[in-house]
Image (cartoon, rainbow over all chains, first blue to last red; front, top):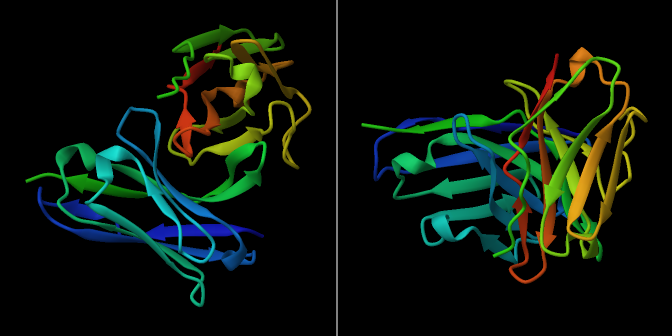
Length: 121
Length: 108
């Protein structure tokens, strides 16, 4: 059974840093792209970042470029999101998800339960 | 950047058919995916590649895509289908996924 379990969320002051983790199990983690998607309170889904299987290719939504870094450790079946210079507008539930697809386009077939980040003084 | 437009809400009576639309410029040329999100829960994939269903998703859920509109159709709606539904495409220009704003399905 595919499982994705996020951790690391919490309350952080503006300008602070935090690292989210996502522990994967039930599939061969190293063979899949992975992604982070966030959802601000009462709002819709917003894609944050993607990372290729070996970590060599990464992409980010413009609003987090230069502040967030996605990474992975395939030996530990884990995905990470290092978040620096946090802003109030980063407050959201952060989901990790497995990426599937190909030439027809990519989508997210399994999601974790999410971890809440609150940025506030 | 590419924009997906969904109606904020759709109302449907139990047993009837709900249709949730997702509009985008020439969206028919793209592959559209749909997610269901119940309150306090993570999104769940219900349709991918316009009309394919993941295992475990009831046949009542179906999708279509043509022209400038993709549609998620839920037949014989049940109370348990009440949720937010999001469409998603992959924007080839930016190499990023794009989500629609979401539609709240209310079962009367």
